[in-house]
Image (cartoon, rainbow, N blue to C red; front, side, top):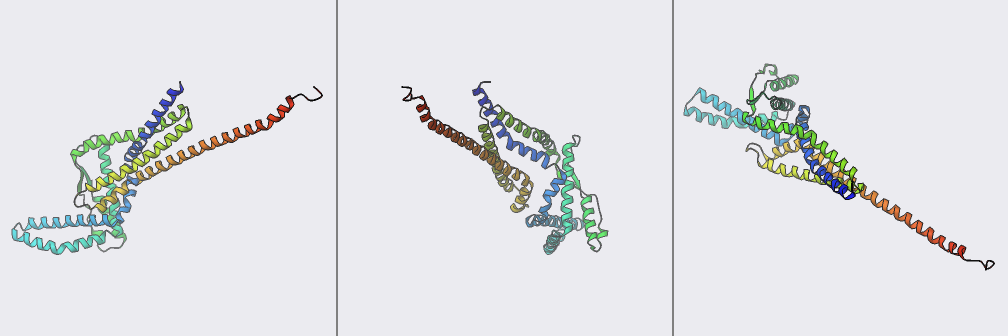
Length: 325
């Protein structure tokens, strides 16, 4: 193959490798990092101690409890006077309900409920994405969560903990209309999460192998990888901004940002790793290049000095002596 054609082919392959690297990291994270229940629960576990997340959960659950109490009283009374009385009662109950829930979010039982709730929700959504036969709304049974909390409270010797009823309550977590498109995207991510990193590695190795100047190809690949890591980190920052800005009204920016940061922690590490490894390899290739050039320069200088020192002796040897004359 002509050198010019080899150089062009190497440049194209290296460019494709650098382009696919950040997309491959993103696809692999979404396809394998978010689909492992154990890893997901471990990632979300520290959020149970985040004050912003605890406040959102306490306020949301407290509002739901007060709403259920209002609905129950309305069904019993059914008159306007009773509704007015219930509003006053809610105003009195609200601080106590919210204080009790905020206190509960600081206990071990809440952390157990948080982990178990994330586990059952993740399992339910994952089964729905993998099961082509399921078309309805994805629901979660809260009985395992209640059972875990009951066990933890009984372990802490809380009075009447064993009398807590464990009921099968179905809660919708994913509407039926969103399941079909989400399932297609999930299958695409599974394929892309495997083949994109493989293709990026194959393109990089092939581009370096066919290059005329391999050290230059290695440097270009390393710099492109570092650039891909930097772009991936920038995309995460921009994605965080838009995600936090598009949150529901009941979720604060601090809580949404904490959840986003927890989910994308591995991806941020990958972005920094790509940036660091790329710059390190490029720096090593640059240093070895100039070290090689310096060594060649020293050798060339030594050869010239030896030739210069040997030249006068050779001239004298070629000149005829007086006896020969």
